[in-house]
Image (cartoon, rainbow, N blue to C red):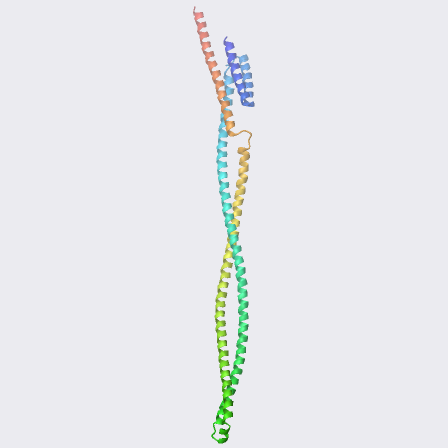
Length: 329
């Protein structure tokens, strides 16, 4: 009866572990059940404690599973921390690249706009310079013509004035011959006076036209000079601003390249983390649940063996006490 109780306990423990191995699809537990069976047979043959070897095997497996669980929990914590940190870093770098790209695009567009405005201003400046040169040429021609015509007009006026003086002096002599010719002298002098008046009027108009043209030329030339300086300063400022933007674009492009290199390294690390932490047929939660079930089953198997061992010890003590009473009688 004692032997059958021990055998039943052995069978129950081995069966329990084998069922657990099938349920969890665990080759390690199946191997453990096989070792337990072999150890039980060996202990029965040698007369050793029938439970000590088996309990040792189960305890060893429990320790192994607990060690694996601890190591995997540490790995899980490492993976969670590294994946979280690397993902956050990736998002940060993506944001930085987006911001840098936006600035680069804005500055590039700003520089291109300035260059276009510079080109338009330089074109207008060239036209202004050409226009002023044409004005200078026309003014020089007008002034040269005026000087020549004025000299001719003044010379003609002086000639008429001289003729009038001579005629007046001549006809002023008080002799009868001249008095007899008085009518014709008055007509000649009158005609010359009209000519003198026309010459004087023409000269005055000529001078007025020249002065007006000169004043208009001076005014427009001053306006052109101011506009020229303004446009030249505009070109200088915008050229400097465009160069500054181009330099900023070059610096930001270099910065973006650096950030991109850092992002590439983070992405490469993330891929390695995924291979290490994610690319597995069974999730951590599934492995954790399976291992906990295995541990619980093995502990239950130990309880079975512990219970049978206690019963065995009690039965042994009762048998010994009965033997002692029989001897004493």
